[in-house]
Structures are given as structure tokens and as C-alpha cells.
Amino acid sequence: QVQLVESGGGLVQAGGSLRLSCAASGRTFSTYAMAWFRQAPGKEREFVAGIGWSGSNTDYADSVKGRFTISRDNAKNTVYLQMNSLKPEDTAVYYCAARSRYGTPRSELEYHYWGQGTQVTVSS
Image (cartoon, rainbow, N blue to C red; front, side, top):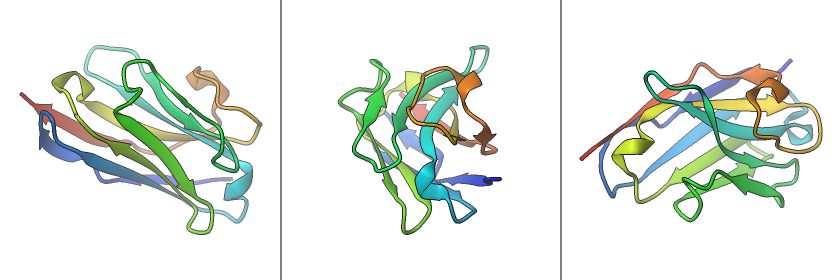
């Protein structure tokens, strides 16, 4: 079992930056692939970024590529999402997710554990 707790959300102006953190419980964090998803009001939850076990493999949605960076610190059981050049359309609840298999698929159905989410609001 893995428990995930996100933090770092908030209100920021367009063009600003935020860093989200996701702290995981358990001693096997390094064996979980991790991802960030987001859900805007009235929209389906969508994949944002994913990172493999070691951190060497990453994947990004086209909408955030070049602006967001996912990373992980296995010693701290934490995954991060650095968000730069934020846009109003990035406004959403951001969720951390984990899966105990190799790879970071973009379907939420492939992830076994979820955090409670953290709100990110970007004002224009």
C-alpha cells in the first residue's frame, strides 16, 4: 500500500511558477512509477507528466512540455512537479498517482494509488 499526499498548490498570476510535491508513504517508493494528472472544472482528468522508477524516463503532455518538469527524490519518497510559465488554462486540481508496474502510461486506469489533490489556480 502507498499513501500519497500532495502539497504546494495555490493561486499564482499568469507567467508565474509553482512547485508541487507529493510525499509517499512506504518503503518501496523507488519501485513505483509516478505521475501527475489534473482535472479542470467540467473536464475529464488528464495526464500531465510521468516519471519512471529511477527518474531517468519522463513523459509529458504536449500542453505542458517545455514548461513543466517532473522529478523524484527516492531518498525522500517524494515526487515533484515544477511548473513554470503558468497559464490560466493550467488551472485545475492536480493529483499525484502511483503504479507498481514499469512505465508511465497516460491512462488514469493504469494507476493504483492516488492522492487527494491540490488546487492550482492561475489568474490572468
